[in-house]
Length: 529
Image (cartoon, rainbow, N blue to C red):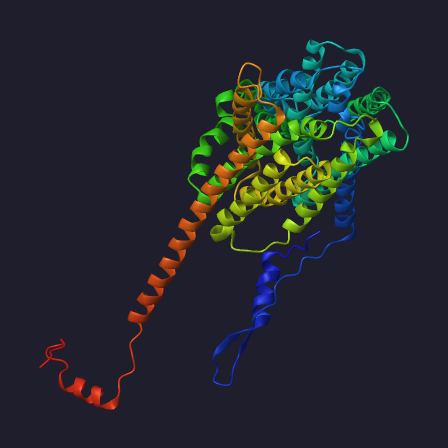
């Protein structure tokens, strides 16, 4: 409760604050700032509001952890190449894996729009159903077409990740966005880490077959599907439901007024109801945000990090999609217990979480050094790709992959902060959606040219050399831009320094001062003899 002071009380207080000094002048005392006192009712209200979102957030984080428990996921490629499935490395590389990229691009935009329009929960249910379909096809399917359908559903699950990442913001007030975003991301990373460790333990120590591991994964994702059915339904979204929810709020207020004063408000409410017009889709927040995108492109910092998101994420995910095939070729293990995909995925996930955490404490002038930092890290990634593509040592390949992922994860939170810090929540979500879509289009183009059997159909070692040249080209561009920006910055600094030196008058000695006084001032002007 806030203490309310009436006008009369303020007048009396003002009279008391006036006094006279020794000369008879009136002096006004400076009154202290009013203090807002929080009563017990206010604290109880805040506690009640906090309790309303803590429960759903805890449940959503638990759901995010559980849906990542797929201990067979790091071993999908070895399973496809095993004697049980008996697919060739060329089939997996050039016919099965490319479907994932095509599926992801095809469903990304519809899923992105439906996520907001349907308010998240239906898309999360769809994601869980796709997870179940993946493991059912892996267990029961044996044909090439069935494995391609498996990759198609995998693309749906990847596209639907946007529903989970944005769902949590619809449950909590804006003041705790950063905190709950950390909770949700941590739960996902812990789920991936636990899943990878569990899968590696089952394969290496328990001597569990790939088929049994796939059955365990099917059990976990089925439980995740049941959890998705119990998720709370958000009351708001970012783009499409704003106008409708506003109308619902107004109608609720009007019905409350009609209940309180039925005789006075019947006519007014009826009149307003008769003049009600459903909001046009052309006035939706989504289309207004689309019009704002052209202004985002004009901001250098936003443009740089958006381009990084498009181009570097393209190369990053291409490496993730094909690295398991590379490991199988570098070291075709004859026994399952010698396949360490799960351990490497767990280690790289943990390293990525650590580098993401460290990135939050890096304080530099990003407007000046962003291109240089991105260029150096991209150069390091290019070197690691060259090492992975040429080495015959599987452990060197494992370490290079973990470092490659760690470097990328280091820049992700920086890019998110640089983009999100100067945009509204709605526009930020749209910018990330557009960046992801453009990256997916580029990834699809590269896949068609490099990996697909209708393109060059390169083997996996040749593909990694292509990715090396791709990251090398990005490195040259980033470092060239960095050199230009830094050079211009220091030139401008020197020019400003010279300008300041000219603007500051130098101290004159007495003789020079006297001489100058003799030559000064004729009708207000300086005249030199």
